[in-house]
Length: 636
Image 1 (cartoon, rainbow, N blue to C red):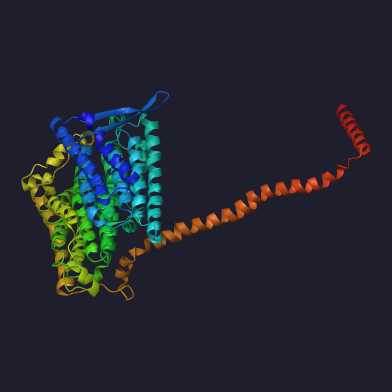
Image 2 (cartoon, helix red, strand yellow):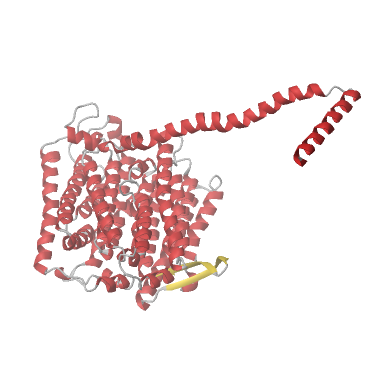
Protein backbone atom coordinates (compact mmCIF):
# COMPACT_ATOMS: atom_id res chain seq x y z
CA UNK A 1 0.00 0.00 0.00
CA UNK A 2 2.93 2.33 0.75
CA UNK A 3 3.82 2.77 -2.92
CA UNK A 4 0.32 4.08 -3.71
CA UNK A 5 0.10 6.71 -0.96
CA UNK A 6 1.37 9.44 -3.28
CA UNK A 7 -1.78 8.92 -5.37
CA UNK A 8 -3.97 10.21 -2.52
CA UNK A 9 -3.08 13.89 -3.15
CA UNK A 10 -2.22 13.40 -6.83
CA UNK A 11 -5.73 12.36 -7.88
CA UNK A 12 -7.44 15.61 -6.72
CA UNK A 13 -4.60 17.53 -8.37
CA UNK A 14 -5.33 15.67 -11.61
CA UNK A 15 -8.98 16.67 -11.23
CA UNK A 16 -7.93 20.31 -10.90
CA UNK A 17 -5.85 20.13 -14.07
CA UNK A 18 -8.50 18.30 -16.14
CA UNK A 19 -11.43 20.44 -15.01
CA UNK A 20 -9.37 23.60 -15.08
CA UNK A 21 -8.25 23.11 -18.68
CA UNK A 22 -11.57 21.69 -19.85
CA UNK A 23 -13.90 23.97 -17.89
CA UNK A 24 -15.32 25.56 -21.07
CA UNK A 25 -15.23 22.43 -23.23
CA UNK A 26 -16.38 19.54 -21.06
CA UNK A 27 -20.09 19.03 -20.24
CA UNK A 28 -21.13 19.80 -16.67
CA UNK A 29 -22.07 16.20 -15.87
CA UNK A 30 -18.60 15.02 -16.89
CA UNK A 31 -16.90 17.79 -14.93
CA UNK A 32 -18.89 16.89 -11.81
CA UNK A 33 -18.17 13.19 -12.29
CA UNK A 34 -14.43 13.72 -12.77
CA UNK A 35 -14.10 16.07 -9.78
CA UNK A 36 -16.15 13.83 -7.47
CA UNK A 37 -14.91 10.39 -8.52
CA UNK A 38 -11.22 11.28 -8.26
CA UNK A 39 -11.81 12.43 -4.67
CA UNK A 40 -13.80 9.21 -4.07
CA UNK A 41 -10.88 7.09 -5.30
CA UNK A 42 -8.59 9.13 -3.04
CA UNK A 43 -10.97 8.33 -0.18
CA UNK A 44 -10.76 4.62 -1.01
CA UNK A 45 -6.96 4.77 -0.83
CA UNK A 46 -7.22 6.68 2.45
CA UNK A 47 -9.46 3.95 3.90
CA UNK A 48 -6.94 1.28 2.89
CA UNK A 49 -4.12 3.34 4.43
CA UNK A 50 -6.11 3.80 7.64
CA UNK A 51 -6.65 0.07 8.08
CA UNK A 52 -2.97 -0.57 7.36
CA UNK A 53 -1.97 1.86 10.13
CA UNK A 54 -4.58 0.40 12.48
CA UNK A 55 -3.38 -3.16 11.86
CA UNK A 56 0.36 -2.50 12.13
CA UNK A 57 0.46 0.52 14.43
CA UNK A 58 3.58 1.59 12.55
CA UNK A 59 3.67 5.01 10.83
CA UNK A 60 4.40 5.02 7.10
CA UNK A 61 7.14 7.32 5.77
CA UNK A 62 7.20 7.93 2.03
CA UNK A 63 10.20 9.88 0.74
CA UNK A 64 9.25 10.97 -2.79
CA UNK A 65 12.37 12.96 -3.68
CA UNK A 66 14.98 15.30 -2.24
CA UNK A 67 13.40 18.75 -2.47
CA UNK A 68 16.52 20.82 -1.96
CA UNK A 69 19.77 20.79 -0.01
CA UNK A 70 21.91 23.62 1.35
CA UNK A 71 25.28 22.50 2.72
CA UNK A 72 24.60 19.63 5.08
CA UNK A 73 20.89 20.42 5.27
CA UNK A 74 18.67 18.21 3.15
CA UNK A 75 14.91 18.77 2.96
CA UNK A 76 12.96 15.88 1.40
CA UNK A 77 9.51 16.10 -0.10
CA UNK A 78 8.15 13.33 2.09
CA UNK A 79 4.89 12.13 3.59
CA UNK A 80 4.23 10.83 7.09
CA UNK A 81 1.09 8.75 7.58
CA UNK A 82 0.39 7.86 11.19
CA UNK A 83 -2.70 7.57 13.36
CA UNK A 84 -3.36 11.32 13.37
CA UNK A 85 -2.90 12.00 9.68
CA UNK A 86 -4.75 8.82 8.62
CA UNK A 87 -7.93 10.06 10.33
CA UNK A 88 -7.50 13.50 8.77
CA UNK A 89 -7.23 11.83 5.36
CA UNK A 90 -10.60 10.17 5.95
CA UNK A 91 -12.19 13.47 6.95
CA UNK A 92 -10.78 15.45 4.03
CA UNK A 93 -11.50 12.92 1.30
CA UNK A 94 -14.71 11.44 2.78
CA UNK A 95 -16.49 14.67 3.68
CA UNK A 96 -14.85 16.27 0.65
CA UNK A 97 -16.44 13.70 -1.68
CA UNK A 98 -19.89 14.27 -0.17
CA UNK A 99 -19.52 18.02 -0.66
CA UNK A 100 -18.36 17.51 -4.26
CA UNK A 101 -21.42 15.35 -4.87
CA UNK A 102 -23.66 17.97 -3.26
CA UNK A 103 -22.09 20.69 -5.43
CA UNK A 104 -23.20 18.93 -8.62
CA UNK A 105 -26.80 19.80 -7.77
CA UNK A 106 -26.18 23.08 -5.95
CA UNK A 107 -23.94 24.69 -8.60
CA UNK A 108 -25.54 23.08 -11.67
CA UNK A 109 -26.91 26.34 -13.09
CA UNK A 110 -23.80 28.38 -12.36
CA UNK A 111 -21.77 29.54 -15.36
CA UNK A 112 -18.51 28.90 -13.52
CA UNK A 113 -19.33 25.24 -12.80
CA UNK A 114 -16.07 23.87 -14.23
CA UNK A 115 -13.92 26.48 -12.53
CA UNK A 116 -15.67 25.81 -9.22
CA UNK A 117 -14.90 22.09 -9.33
CA UNK A 118 -11.32 22.80 -10.35
CA UNK A 119 -10.91 25.03 -7.28
CA UNK A 120 -12.51 22.42 -5.01
CA UNK A 121 -10.13 19.74 -6.28
CA UNK A 122 -7.15 22.05 -5.82
CA UNK A 123 -8.22 22.77 -2.26
CA UNK A 124 -8.44 19.05 -1.45
CA UNK A 125 -4.93 18.57 -2.90
CA UNK A 126 -3.40 21.30 -0.73
CA UNK A 127 -5.28 20.16 2.38
CA UNK A 128 -3.94 16.65 1.86
CA UNK A 129 -0.41 18.04 1.52
CA UNK A 130 -0.88 19.91 4.78
CA UNK A 131 -1.75 16.81 6.79
CA UNK A 132 0.52 14.35 4.96
CA UNK A 133 3.77 16.34 5.11
CA UNK A 134 6.55 14.82 7.21
CA UNK A 135 8.14 18.19 7.93
CA UNK A 136 7.05 21.74 8.63
CA UNK A 137 7.98 22.96 5.15
CA UNK A 138 5.67 20.56 3.31
CA UNK A 139 2.99 21.40 5.87
CA UNK A 140 3.56 25.09 5.18
CA UNK A 141 3.14 24.59 1.43
CA UNK A 142 -0.24 22.98 2.06
CA UNK A 143 -0.99 25.69 4.65
CA UNK A 144 -0.44 28.46 2.10
CA UNK A 145 -2.20 26.50 -0.63
CA UNK A 146 -5.46 26.18 1.28
CA UNK A 147 -5.23 29.90 2.01
CA UNK A 148 -5.01 30.58 -1.72
CA UNK A 149 -7.95 28.28 -2.48
CA UNK A 150 -9.93 29.92 0.29
CA UNK A 151 -9.39 33.27 -1.41
CA UNK A 152 -10.44 31.89 -4.79
CA UNK A 153 -13.56 30.16 -3.48
CA UNK A 154 -14.78 32.89 -1.11
CA UNK A 155 -14.52 35.39 -3.95
CA UNK A 156 -15.88 32.95 -6.52
CA UNK A 157 -18.72 35.36 -7.35
CA UNK A 158 -16.25 38.24 -7.59
CA UNK A 159 -18.58 40.45 -9.64
CA UNK A 160 -20.18 41.32 -6.31
CA UNK A 161 -17.77 43.86 -4.71
CA UNK A 162 -18.66 42.79 -1.14
CA UNK A 163 -17.82 39.17 -1.97
CA UNK A 164 -14.49 40.22 -3.46
CA UNK A 165 -13.77 42.28 -0.33
CA UNK A 166 -14.57 39.27 1.86
CA UNK A 167 -12.05 37.18 -0.10
CA UNK A 168 -9.37 39.84 0.31
CA UNK A 169 -10.12 40.14 4.01
CA UNK A 170 -9.69 36.39 4.49
CA UNK A 171 -6.43 36.43 2.52
CA UNK A 172 -4.91 39.36 4.44
CA UNK A 173 -5.90 38.13 7.92
CA UNK A 174 -4.55 34.68 7.15
CA UNK A 175 -1.25 36.20 6.02
CA UNK A 176 -0.87 37.77 9.47
CA UNK A 177 -1.09 34.36 11.10
CA UNK A 178 1.04 32.73 8.42
CA UNK A 179 3.91 35.12 9.19
CA UNK A 180 3.94 33.83 12.77
CA UNK A 181 4.00 30.25 11.51
CA UNK A 182 6.87 30.97 9.10
CA UNK A 183 9.00 32.67 11.77
CA UNK A 184 8.34 29.68 14.04
CA UNK A 185 9.63 27.32 11.33
CA UNK A 186 12.87 29.33 11.10
CA UNK A 187 13.24 29.19 14.89
CA UNK A 188 12.59 25.45 14.88
CA UNK A 189 15.36 24.96 12.33
CA UNK A 190 17.72 27.23 14.26
CA UNK A 191 17.00 25.37 17.51
CA UNK A 192 16.89 21.73 16.36
CA UNK A 193 18.90 21.86 13.13
CA UNK A 194 16.00 20.24 11.28
CA UNK A 195 12.37 20.83 10.35
CA UNK A 196 11.49 17.13 10.09
CA UNK A 197 8.87 16.07 12.62
CA UNK A 198 10.82 12.96 13.62
CA UNK A 199 14.01 14.90 14.37
CA UNK A 200 12.35 17.87 16.05
CA UNK A 201 10.04 15.89 18.33
CA UNK A 202 12.76 13.41 19.34
CA UNK A 203 15.12 16.22 20.37
CA UNK A 204 12.34 18.22 22.02
CA UNK A 205 11.47 15.26 24.29
CA UNK A 206 14.88 15.65 25.97
CA UNK A 207 14.37 19.35 26.80
CA UNK A 208 13.00 20.72 30.05
CA UNK A 209 9.56 22.25 30.48
CA UNK A 210 9.35 26.02 30.37
CA UNK A 211 12.33 26.53 28.01
CA UNK A 212 12.15 30.11 26.70
CA UNK A 213 12.94 29.13 23.11
CA UNK A 214 10.18 26.52 23.08
CA UNK A 215 7.84 29.10 24.59
CA UNK A 216 8.57 31.54 21.75
CA UNK A 217 8.24 28.83 19.07
CA UNK A 218 4.87 27.63 20.39
CA UNK A 219 3.49 31.14 20.76
CA UNK A 220 4.40 31.85 17.12
CA UNK A 221 2.86 28.57 16.01
CA UNK A 222 -0.28 29.53 17.91
CA UNK A 223 -0.34 32.87 16.05
CA UNK A 224 -0.42 30.84 12.83
CA UNK A 225 -3.20 28.65 14.19
CA UNK A 226 -5.12 31.75 15.32
CA UNK A 227 -5.28 33.05 11.75
CA UNK A 228 -6.17 29.79 10.05
CA UNK A 229 -8.62 28.62 12.72
CA UNK A 230 -10.29 32.00 13.30
CA UNK A 231 -9.54 32.74 16.94
CA UNK A 232 -9.51 36.11 18.70
CA UNK A 233 -8.30 38.52 17.38
CA UNK A 234 -8.06 37.05 13.84
CA UNK A 235 -11.58 35.62 13.64
CA UNK A 236 -13.60 38.25 11.73
CA UNK A 237 -12.67 36.88 8.31
CA UNK A 238 -14.60 33.63 8.75
CA UNK A 239 -18.16 35.03 9.09
CA UNK A 240 -17.51 37.24 6.04
CA UNK A 241 -16.31 34.15 4.19
CA UNK A 242 -19.96 33.09 3.95
CA UNK A 243 -19.91 35.17 0.75
CA UNK A 244 -18.71 32.03 -1.03
CA UNK A 245 -21.10 29.34 -2.30
CA UNK A 246 -22.54 27.18 0.48
CA UNK A 247 -20.49 24.05 -0.44
CA UNK A 248 -17.40 26.20 0.12
CA UNK A 249 -18.64 27.08 3.60
CA UNK A 250 -19.14 23.40 4.34
CA UNK A 251 -15.81 22.17 2.98
CA UNK A 252 -13.39 24.92 3.90
CA UNK A 253 -14.96 26.75 6.81
CA UNK A 254 -16.51 23.86 8.71
CA UNK A 255 -14.89 20.50 8.00
CA UNK A 256 -11.29 21.00 6.93
CA UNK A 257 -9.30 24.23 6.49
CA UNK A 258 -10.30 25.93 9.73
CA UNK A 259 -9.26 22.82 11.66
CA UNK A 260 -5.72 23.05 10.22
CA UNK A 261 -4.59 25.03 13.26
CA UNK A 262 -5.87 22.33 15.63
CA UNK A 263 -4.16 19.66 13.55
CA UNK A 264 -0.86 21.57 13.58
CA UNK A 265 -0.90 21.96 17.38
CA UNK A 266 -1.93 18.32 17.88
CA UNK A 267 0.90 17.25 15.55
CA UNK A 268 3.36 19.44 17.53
CA UNK A 269 1.92 18.38 20.89
CA UNK A 270 5.29 17.66 22.51
CA UNK A 271 6.43 21.24 21.89
CA UNK A 272 3.27 22.66 23.44
CA UNK A 273 3.43 20.29 26.41
CA UNK A 274 6.89 21.74 27.11
CA UNK A 275 5.37 25.25 27.11
CA UNK A 276 2.68 25.34 29.86
CA UNK A 277 2.40 29.12 29.53
CA UNK A 278 1.44 28.75 25.88
CA UNK A 279 -1.15 26.10 26.77
CA UNK A 280 -2.67 28.49 29.31
CA UNK A 281 -2.84 31.21 26.65
CA UNK A 282 -4.46 28.77 24.22
CA UNK A 283 -7.11 27.69 26.72
CA UNK A 284 -8.03 31.28 27.64
CA UNK A 285 -8.11 32.52 24.03
CA UNK A 286 -10.07 29.43 22.94
CA UNK A 287 -12.71 29.81 25.62
CA UNK A 288 -12.97 33.57 25.04
CA UNK A 289 -13.49 32.94 21.34
CA UNK A 290 -16.07 30.22 21.98
CA UNK A 291 -18.08 32.46 24.31
CA UNK A 292 -17.78 35.66 22.29
CA UNK A 293 -18.80 34.00 19.01
CA UNK A 294 -21.72 32.26 20.73
CA UNK A 295 -22.96 35.58 22.07
CA UNK A 296 -22.93 37.01 18.54
CA UNK A 297 -24.72 33.96 17.10
CA UNK A 298 -27.63 34.43 19.54
CA UNK A 299 -29.18 37.26 17.51
CA UNK A 300 -28.07 36.71 13.90
CA UNK A 301 -30.83 36.42 11.32
CA UNK A 302 -28.82 35.17 8.32
CA UNK A 303 -28.89 31.37 8.48
CA UNK A 304 -25.30 31.08 7.23
CA UNK A 305 -24.04 33.75 9.64
CA UNK A 306 -25.47 31.76 12.56
CA UNK A 307 -23.52 28.72 11.39
CA UNK A 308 -20.42 30.81 10.73
CA UNK A 309 -20.26 32.14 14.29
CA UNK A 310 -21.14 28.67 15.51
CA UNK A 311 -18.04 27.41 13.69
CA UNK A 312 -15.87 30.06 15.35
CA UNK A 313 -17.33 29.07 18.72
CA UNK A 314 -16.76 25.34 18.18
CA UNK A 315 -13.19 25.99 17.07
CA UNK A 316 -12.76 27.86 20.35
CA UNK A 317 -13.91 24.71 22.16
CA UNK A 318 -11.25 22.72 20.31
CA UNK A 319 -8.55 25.17 21.37
CA UNK A 320 -9.85 25.01 24.94
CA UNK A 321 -9.35 21.26 24.77
CA UNK A 322 -5.80 21.67 23.45
CA UNK A 323 -5.01 24.25 26.13
CA UNK A 324 -6.04 22.00 29.00
CA UNK A 325 -4.02 19.10 27.55
CA UNK A 326 -6.99 17.16 26.14
CA UNK A 327 -5.32 16.56 22.78
CA UNK A 328 -7.46 13.50 22.05
CA UNK A 329 -10.65 15.29 23.10
CA UNK A 330 -9.87 18.29 20.91
CA UNK A 331 -9.18 16.08 17.90
CA UNK A 332 -12.31 14.05 18.69
CA UNK A 333 -14.29 17.27 18.41
CA UNK A 334 -12.57 18.02 15.08
CA UNK A 335 -13.94 14.70 13.83
CA UNK A 336 -17.50 15.05 15.11
CA UNK A 337 -17.63 18.73 14.13
CA UNK A 338 -16.72 17.79 10.56
CA UNK A 339 -19.84 15.60 10.45
CA UNK A 340 -22.49 17.81 12.01
CA UNK A 341 -21.23 21.18 10.83
CA UNK A 342 -20.82 20.04 7.22
CA UNK A 343 -24.34 18.62 7.54
CA UNK A 344 -25.72 21.90 8.90
CA UNK A 345 -24.06 24.02 6.21
CA UNK A 346 -25.24 21.74 3.44
CA UNK A 347 -28.70 21.72 5.01
CA UNK A 348 -28.66 25.51 5.06
CA UNK A 349 -27.68 25.39 1.39
CA UNK A 350 -30.65 23.14 0.70
CA UNK A 351 -32.93 25.66 2.43
CA UNK A 352 -31.41 28.55 0.46
CA UNK A 353 -31.80 26.52 -2.75
CA UNK A 354 -35.47 25.85 -2.00
CA UNK A 355 -36.07 29.48 -0.95
CA UNK A 356 -34.70 30.91 -4.23
CA UNK A 357 -31.45 32.14 -2.60
CA UNK A 358 -33.10 33.70 0.47
CA UNK A 359 -30.90 33.52 3.59
CA UNK A 360 -32.88 35.64 6.09
CA UNK A 361 -34.58 33.37 8.63
CA UNK A 362 -37.20 36.06 9.32
CA UNK A 363 -38.55 35.39 5.83
CA UNK A 364 -38.68 31.62 6.23
CA UNK A 365 -40.81 29.51 8.60
CA UNK A 366 -43.05 26.50 7.99
CA UNK A 367 -40.53 24.68 5.80
CA UNK A 368 -40.77 21.40 7.72
CA UNK A 369 -43.43 19.95 5.42
CA UNK A 370 -41.94 21.35 2.21
CA UNK A 371 -38.34 20.19 2.83
CA UNK A 372 -38.73 17.03 4.95
CA UNK A 373 -35.31 15.46 4.25
CA UNK A 374 -33.56 18.76 4.87
CA UNK A 375 -35.51 19.28 8.10
CA UNK A 376 -34.90 15.89 9.67
CA UNK A 377 -31.21 15.84 8.77
CA UNK A 378 -30.72 19.37 10.12
CA UNK A 379 -32.59 18.36 13.28
CA UNK A 380 -30.05 15.58 13.79
CA UNK A 381 -27.17 18.00 13.20
CA UNK A 382 -28.67 20.50 15.64
CA UNK A 383 -29.07 17.87 18.38
CA UNK A 384 -25.48 16.74 17.77
CA UNK A 385 -23.94 20.22 18.01
CA UNK A 386 -26.04 21.02 21.09
CA UNK A 387 -24.30 18.17 22.91
CA UNK A 388 -27.41 16.10 23.62
CA UNK A 389 -26.79 12.33 23.92
CA UNK A 390 -26.41 9.95 22.27
CA UNK A 391 -25.39 11.95 19.21
CA UNK A 392 -21.75 12.62 18.36
CA UNK A 393 -21.29 16.14 19.70
CA UNK A 394 -22.19 15.04 23.23
CA UNK A 395 -19.21 12.69 23.57
CA UNK A 396 -16.53 15.01 22.20
CA UNK A 397 -17.78 18.14 23.98
CA UNK A 398 -18.20 16.24 27.25
CA UNK A 399 -14.59 15.03 27.06
CA UNK A 400 -13.31 18.57 26.60
CA UNK A 401 -15.44 19.89 29.47
CA UNK A 402 -14.33 17.06 31.78
CA UNK A 403 -10.65 17.88 31.20
CA UNK A 404 -11.44 21.56 31.62
CA UNK A 405 -13.06 20.82 35.00
CA UNK A 406 -9.86 19.08 36.12
CA UNK A 407 -7.84 22.08 34.96
CA UNK A 408 -9.98 24.98 36.20
CA UNK A 409 -13.47 25.18 37.66
CA UNK A 410 -13.86 28.74 36.38
CA UNK A 411 -13.09 27.75 32.80
CA UNK A 412 -15.47 24.81 33.15
CA UNK A 413 -18.38 26.97 34.29
CA UNK A 414 -17.89 29.39 31.40
CA UNK A 415 -17.64 26.42 29.03
CA UNK A 416 -20.96 24.99 30.25
CA UNK A 417 -22.67 28.37 29.89
CA UNK A 418 -21.32 28.61 26.35
CA UNK A 419 -22.67 25.11 25.66
CA UNK A 420 -26.09 26.40 26.72
CA UNK A 421 -25.74 29.34 24.31
CA UNK A 422 -24.90 26.85 21.54
CA UNK A 423 -28.05 24.86 22.16
CA UNK A 424 -30.19 28.00 22.24
CA UNK A 425 -28.99 29.64 19.01
CA UNK A 426 -29.01 26.36 17.09
CA UNK A 427 -32.58 25.45 18.06
CA UNK A 428 -33.54 29.09 17.48
CA UNK A 429 -32.28 28.69 13.92
CA UNK A 430 -34.16 25.41 13.51
CA UNK A 431 -37.45 26.76 14.89
CA UNK A 432 -37.34 30.01 12.89
CA UNK A 433 -36.57 28.16 9.68
CA UNK A 434 -38.86 25.13 9.80
CA UNK A 435 -41.71 25.90 12.21
CA UNK A 436 -44.58 28.38 12.34
CA UNK A 437 -46.12 30.08 9.36
CA UNK A 438 -44.30 30.79 6.14
CA UNK A 439 -43.10 34.42 6.16
CA UNK A 440 -41.66 34.68 2.67
CA UNK A 441 -43.24 35.91 -0.56
CA UNK A 442 -45.98 34.10 -2.44
CA UNK A 443 -43.55 33.47 -5.31
CA UNK A 444 -41.03 31.85 -2.94
CA UNK A 445 -43.74 29.69 -1.41
CA UNK A 446 -44.92 28.62 -4.85
CA UNK A 447 -41.43 27.47 -5.84
CA UNK A 448 -40.56 25.70 -2.56
CA UNK A 449 -39.25 22.20 -3.25
CA UNK A 450 -36.95 19.59 -1.77
CA UNK A 451 -33.43 19.48 -3.17
CA UNK A 452 -32.38 16.86 -5.75
CA UNK A 453 -30.85 13.53 -4.75
CA UNK A 454 -27.29 14.74 -5.36
CA UNK A 455 -27.89 17.20 -2.50
CA UNK A 456 -30.03 15.09 -0.14
CA UNK A 457 -27.90 11.92 -0.23
CA UNK A 458 -24.86 13.71 1.32
CA UNK A 459 -27.21 15.15 3.94
CA UNK A 460 -28.45 11.68 4.88
CA UNK A 461 -24.94 10.20 5.05
CA UNK A 462 -23.68 13.06 7.22
CA UNK A 463 -26.76 12.78 9.44
CA UNK A 464 -25.99 9.11 10.07
CA UNK A 465 -22.37 9.96 10.89
CA UNK A 466 -23.55 12.74 13.22
CA UNK A 467 -25.67 10.16 15.05
CA UNK A 468 -23.13 7.36 15.42
CA UNK A 469 -19.79 9.17 15.05
CA UNK A 470 -19.39 9.67 18.78
CA UNK A 471 -19.40 5.92 19.43
CA UNK A 472 -15.66 5.73 18.71
CA UNK A 473 -15.02 7.79 21.84
CA UNK A 474 -17.44 6.42 24.45
CA UNK A 475 -15.89 6.93 27.92
CA UNK A 476 -15.45 4.15 30.48
CA UNK A 477 -18.18 5.58 32.70
CA UNK A 478 -20.67 4.76 29.94
CA UNK A 479 -19.26 1.30 29.38
CA UNK A 480 -16.96 2.20 26.48
CA UNK A 481 -13.23 1.90 25.86
CA UNK A 482 -12.62 5.14 23.95
CA UNK A 483 -11.30 3.45 20.83
CA UNK A 484 -10.20 6.77 19.35
CA UNK A 485 -8.06 7.53 22.42
CA UNK A 486 -6.43 4.12 22.21
CA UNK A 487 -5.78 4.54 18.49
CA UNK A 488 -4.22 8.02 18.89
CA UNK A 489 -2.19 7.15 22.00
CA UNK A 490 1.13 6.68 20.12
CA UNK A 491 0.89 10.22 18.68
CA UNK A 492 0.56 11.78 22.15
CA UNK A 493 2.80 9.28 23.96
CA UNK A 494 5.72 11.68 24.49
CA UNK A 495 3.42 14.33 25.96
CA UNK A 496 1.82 11.75 28.25
CA UNK A 497 5.25 10.76 29.59
CA UNK A 498 6.13 14.38 30.34
CA UNK A 499 2.89 15.14 32.17
CA UNK A 500 2.95 11.86 34.09
CA UNK A 501 -0.06 9.78 35.03
CA UNK A 502 -3.15 11.91 34.56
CA UNK A 503 -5.63 12.18 37.39
CA UNK A 504 -8.93 10.61 36.40
CA UNK A 505 -12.26 11.88 37.67
CA UNK A 506 -14.41 9.49 39.67
CA UNK A 507 -17.38 8.03 37.86
CA UNK A 508 -19.80 9.87 40.11
CA UNK A 509 -18.13 13.18 39.24
CA UNK A 510 -18.26 12.36 35.55
CA UNK A 511 -21.99 11.59 35.81
CA UNK A 512 -22.56 14.93 37.52
CA UNK A 513 -20.55 16.82 34.89
CA UNK A 514 -22.45 15.11 32.06
CA UNK A 515 -25.73 15.90 33.77
CA UNK A 516 -24.79 19.56 34.13
CA UNK A 517 -23.76 19.99 30.47
CA UNK A 518 -26.79 18.10 29.13
CA UNK A 519 -29.05 19.97 31.54
CA UNK A 520 -27.74 23.32 30.26
CA UNK A 521 -28.39 22.23 26.66
CA UNK A 522 -31.92 21.00 27.42
CA UNK A 523 -32.85 24.14 29.39
CA UNK A 524 -31.66 26.29 26.47
CA UNK A 525 -33.66 24.11 24.06
CA UNK A 526 -36.81 24.53 26.14
CA UNK A 527 -36.31 28.28 26.37
CA UNK A 528 -35.88 28.50 22.59
CA UNK A 529 -39.03 26.38 22.14
CA UNK A 530 -41.02 28.59 24.51
CA UNK A 531 -39.90 31.78 22.80
CA UNK A 532 -40.03 30.81 19.12
CA UNK A 533 -42.67 28.05 18.99
CA UNK A 534 -45.07 28.75 21.85
CA UNK A 535 -44.47 32.50 21.83
CA UNK A 536 -44.24 32.68 18.01
CA UNK A 537 -41.54 35.33 18.36
CA UNK A 538 -39.85 36.60 15.19
CA UNK A 539 -36.69 38.73 15.50
CA UNK A 540 -37.12 42.46 14.92
CA UNK A 541 -36.47 43.95 11.51
CA UNK A 542 -33.21 45.81 11.03
CA UNK A 543 -34.99 49.16 11.20
CA UNK A 544 -36.66 48.47 14.54
CA UNK A 545 -35.17 49.22 17.93
CA UNK A 546 -33.64 46.39 19.90
CA UNK A 547 -32.53 46.02 23.46
CA UNK A 548 -29.02 47.45 23.85
CA UNK A 549 -27.44 44.02 24.48
CA UNK A 550 -29.32 42.46 21.56
CA UNK A 551 -28.20 45.33 19.38
CA UNK A 552 -24.57 44.83 20.40
CA UNK A 553 -24.82 41.13 19.63
CA UNK A 554 -26.62 41.68 16.32
CA UNK A 555 -23.93 44.17 15.24
CA UNK A 556 -21.21 41.71 16.27
CA UNK A 557 -20.11 43.97 19.13
CA UNK A 558 -18.78 46.35 16.47
CA UNK A 559 -15.48 44.45 16.28
CA UNK A 560 -15.08 45.16 12.57
CA UNK A 561 -15.76 48.85 13.17
CA UNK A 562 -13.25 48.81 16.04
CA UNK A 563 -10.59 47.23 13.82
CA UNK A 564 -11.45 49.76 11.15
CA UNK A 565 -10.98 52.64 13.58
CA UNK A 566 -7.86 51.36 15.36
CA UNK A 567 -6.02 49.65 12.49
CA UNK A 568 -7.29 50.37 9.00
CA UNK A 569 -7.81 54.13 9.27
CA UNK A 570 -4.45 54.84 10.99
CA UNK A 571 -2.69 52.67 8.40
CA UNK A 572 -4.52 54.48 5.59
CA UNK A 573 -3.53 57.85 7.10
CA UNK A 574 0.07 56.67 7.48
CA UNK A 575 0.05 55.50 3.87
CA UNK A 576 -1.23 58.88 2.70
CA UNK A 577 1.50 60.60 4.76
CA UNK A 578 4.23 58.42 3.28
CA UNK A 579 2.81 58.94 -0.21
CA UNK A 580 2.35 62.70 -0.09
CA UNK A 581 5.18 63.71 2.25
CA UNK A 582 7.87 61.02 2.15
CA UNK A 583 7.38 59.83 -1.43
CA UNK A 584 6.21 62.90 -3.37
CA UNK A 585 7.94 65.66 -1.37
CA UNK A 586 10.89 63.71 0.00
CA UNK A 587 12.07 61.04 -2.43
CA UNK A 588 10.50 62.42 -5.61
CA UNK A 589 11.41 65.97 -4.49
CA UNK A 590 15.07 65.00 -4.04
CA UNK A 591 15.30 63.11 -7.33
CA UNK A 592 13.40 65.72 -9.31
CA UNK A 593 15.32 68.51 -7.54
CA UNK A 594 18.65 67.01 -8.60
CA UNK A 595 17.35 66.71 -12.13
CA UNK A 596 16.13 70.31 -12.20
CA UNK A 597 19.39 71.50 -10.65
CA UNK A 598 21.35 69.74 -13.38
CA UNK A 599 19.13 71.29 -16.04
CA UNK A 600 19.41 74.79 -14.59
CA UNK A 601 23.17 74.44 -14.13
CA UNK A 602 23.56 73.22 -17.69
CA UNK A 603 21.65 76.25 -18.94
CA UNK A 604 24.40 78.50 -17.50
CA UNK A 605 27.32 76.30 -18.42
CA UNK A 606 26.24 75.91 -22.04
CA UNK A 607 26.74 79.69 -22.51
CA UNK A 608 30.46 79.04 -22.09
CA UNK A 609 30.43 76.83 -25.19
CA UNK A 610 30.90 79.71 -27.68
CA UNK A 611 32.91 77.91 -30.38
CA UNK A 612 35.64 80.63 -30.21
CA UNK A 613 39.10 78.95 -30.18
CA UNK A 614 40.73 81.96 -28.59
CA UNK A 615 38.31 81.85 -25.67
CA UNK A 616 39.05 78.14 -25.18
CA UNK A 617 42.84 78.84 -25.10
CA UNK A 618 42.23 81.64 -22.61
CA UNK A 619 40.30 79.27 -20.33
CA UNK A 620 43.03 76.63 -20.60
CA UNK A 621 45.62 79.18 -19.48
CA UNK A 622 43.44 80.20 -16.52
CA UNK A 623 43.08 76.51 -15.61
CA UNK A 624 46.85 75.94 -15.78
CA UNK A 625 47.49 78.99 -13.62
CA UNK A 626 44.90 77.78 -11.09
CA UNK A 627 46.57 74.36 -10.91
CA UNK A 628 50.00 75.90 -10.44
CA UNK A 629 48.75 78.19 -7.67
CA UNK A 630 47.08 75.24 -5.94
CA UNK A 631 50.34 73.23 -6.14
CA UNK A 632 52.32 76.16 -4.80
CA UNK A 633 50.04 76.50 -1.77
CA UNK A 634 50.40 72.79 -1.02
CA UNK A 635 54.26 73.00 -1.15
CA UNK A 636 54.42 75.99 1.16
